[in-house]
Each structure stands twice: as structure tokens, then as C-alpha cells.
Amino acid sequence: MSAPPPLSIGPIAARVEADAVRRYREATAFDGVTGDGDEVPATFPAIWLWHPAAKAAFDDLAGEEHLIPVLIAQRFSYRRALHIGEEIRFKITRRADAAVRDDVQIEAHIEGRDGEVIADFAATYRLFQPELAQ
Image (cartoon, rainbow, N blue to C red):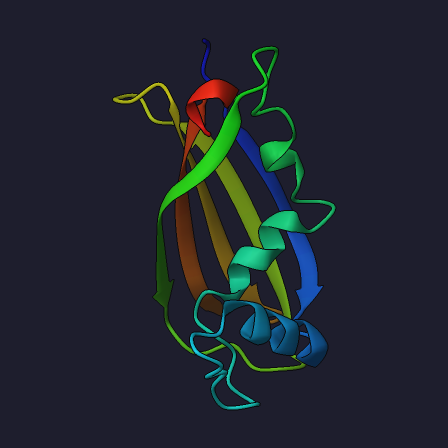
């Protein structure tokens, strides 16, 4: 298996939509505890990996071997909280892990419209053969 090539995407414009935050909070709630209605969960930016312009970070990971990317780690580093209604820009980079060929790193850098750095987050995905992922 060959590692996927490095990739840079963005900047991509997005908005922290109240309805998307509500749906995310409901989908990830533990025992029905959904938190403050105005609070944006720390892990919320992960949804932007599925933004149509950002999906390219995952589109070619399966390759000819039809590998399945499985999230194995993530990290969020905030300089300030996100706010509902806020417009942001994010950039995504993807690279293979030199030490572990089956691992792919996705990193995102989030800024406000004025260029203020809001957060950085990273996710590591391991690429599994379909029969091993069951």
C-alpha cells in the first residue's frame, strides 16, 4: 500500500450555524446532556472535514485497495471559543505519517474573518483493509 500524497485545501469560508451546532450537540450528547444552547462544543470544527470543499482530504484515501479510514486520535487547541453566527476561514493539510505508513494526519487551522487565529485541530486516521475493519 502506498501512502496518500500530501494535500493542502483552502482557505474555505464557513459559518458557525446555530442549527448545525444544535444537531451536532444532539448527535454527540452523553445521556441527553447537550450543554448550553449558545455554547459551541470544542469538537464541533470536526464537521468541517465534511464540507464539500474539504472532502477532498478523504476522497482518495480508500485508493485501489478500498481502505477504510478510522479515526484513532484527535486534538483541539483553542485560543478562544467559537461563537454561533461567526464567519470563519479554515485551511486543511493532509500528510502521511512517516513512522506509520497506515496513518494519515489531517490538520486544520481556523481563523476569524479578520485573520485572528481561533484554533488548530488535528486528527489521525488509520487506514484499514475492509476485512480487518469488521
